[in-house]
Length: 134
Image (tube, rainbow, N blue to C red):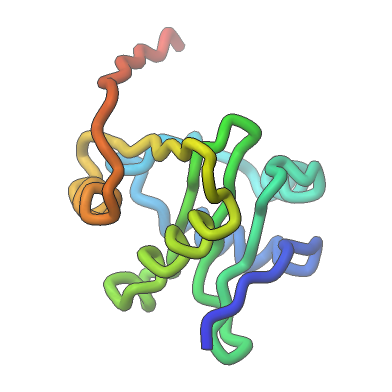
């Protein structure tokens, strides 16, 4: 049975593991090169009003969050991707945020996420361009 619980300081290593799994070419929400120290400070800052660990029978599967601007973020451990946990998390978030507008910022290269959100009734509303001036 899938459950959602608040993220705690004790989840920082699991979240770090998931951060290391992220493919920078298809994910847009985290910068490559984040240090463990920076990661810990981020987790401790309680950055989102809705920030949950996804568990199934007490096994950590992934996490989901909603920003102050109602932007959804989800990441599922690669071992559990494609098993419906992302879809289930979005539906759970929708049940909490009934009557509100939700957004999902998805990389143009992340075809799996695009298909998932589209299949759940989300509509493409914009293309956003970015340029790093390092």
